Amino acid sequence: MTVADTDHPLRRRRPEPDPSATDRVAEELRREILSNRLRSGLPLVESQLVERLGVSRTPIREALKLLAAEGLVDLRRNRAAIVAPLDPVELGHLFEVEEALESFAAGLAADRISPLDIDRLERLQIQMEAAEAAGDRDRYIRLNQRIHLVIIAASGNPSLAKTHERVLGGLQRARNVALATEGRVEESIREHREILEALRCGDRDVARTAMARHIARTGAIVAEVCRHDLLGSREPPGGRGIARRRRT
Image 1 (cartoon, rainbow, N blue to C red):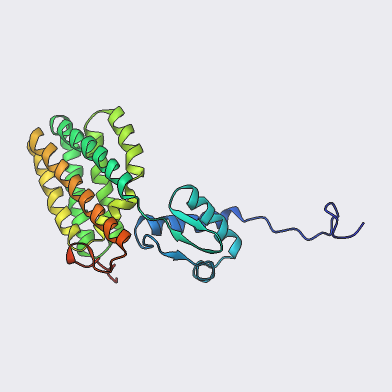
Image 2 (spheres, rainbow, N blue to C red; image 1 turned 90 degrees about the horizontal axis):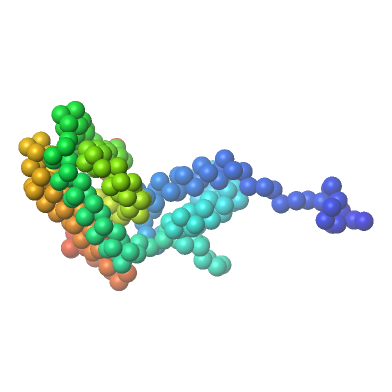
């Protein structure tokens, strides 16, 4: 028997992946993809990730497999993995569902929302606008999402909330792509103010219409971004640049 035999205790074995390192890498890359810091189609070069994240190649490869299973990364034979492109057809369908769900929820919320939730939305709106003024895009996105969730909850319909949760998971990345488009954040803030005012006044029709317009606008921007990405155009959508992340 030699050391090359399978069962020999001295045979060198391939090291097992470190689950904690794999999870940490996957979470970091997932966050950067969902926030649009890592853009659609960007190559994920192992050597660069090793240097940047301070881990070996093994957790990098395992993390990329996890993200590929989530649809966030495309693995390619003998080439670097890439950030998975957004699917404009699938997103179009999801935004149609999202528009129907959130506009319906806003209409219900206009009738059912409590003064406590109105106060909560007003505080979140102020905090969200302050985050944008400070250039803190991550905080802006988190507050934006919380506003939508408060409105969904205020509809008083648990079945609607569960359905919305399933749809929202497929749209998080696309929404952040829209917010990275120059001028969209300011536009979105104005739309949020309109929705909040309708809820404050208990105006079901205005709340429903304002929310539908808000979601439809986001979907239209994402569709335009996807078209330009598919065409490989360097000219940004609408002739306007994709906003760079502000330095803080």
